Length: 194
Image (cartoon, rainbow, N blue to C red):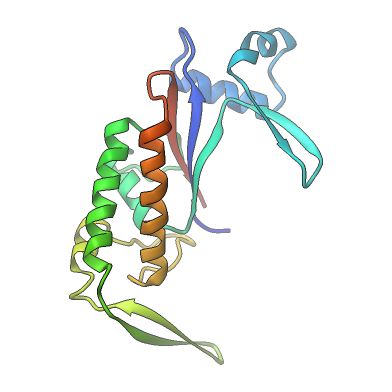
């Protein structure tokens, strides 16, 4: 349980909007697509095999990126792509959105890269935990451009090594998306759940 965040790829189709594709994907997942409909959609369906549990399924969505409890990245999508609506729906992400998020992550990453951290100690029940966090002054740009947010099982709100590592991984993946993703023929979709 917690904040799970996804970027999905879905092939664009003639005369089908993103909403149509989302609806069709849900019908596939609920086994509601008729044989004829499925046959017509085969060129657009991703076949996914899950070997650990020995089954396969079809979907219009293919996972491009996944985050867990990266509430600062989620907040960016809510504010910049979802018009402030944190509602677990599906939202199209344009190439310029990815460029903007990448630029923001890189600025924050560079502002934290050579900064020293301090040890923060907390007590949960009988256990004492320590972690390395950035001072309020050192994390000023992060708090301004890519702030953490609280939410239902959204994870930590400290500006710590997890925050930094998430930035690093996000930057790497966003660069790949900008280089390789075909925005003309595919939708890039953001969704979250908790």
